[in-house]
Image (cartoon, rainbow, N blue to C red; front, top):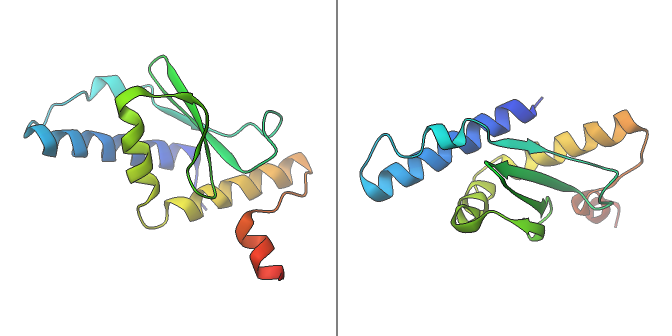
Length: 118
């Protein structure tokens, strides 16, 4: 089962690698991402979503298609979209959403669940 910590570490590594490759530097912004945080708040949004906080910036994205719902991360937002497109990321986020919803006692369906029912 996926964990928020696992996703945070994966995103942090991805962002550092992407910037290192782009600038051919291996020490790019490592400390900046030490406080990177991913979480979900079912009381704020009904649709499946995830929050990302990097330093003082914060944004909320849809789990279904990674469309930004609210907030902003500046130039780093592009890394969120690329990270989301990697194999397994969406599925891990959906798994965490279902777990959070079941712990809260909420019957929440993702878009994929609705397609399966049709």
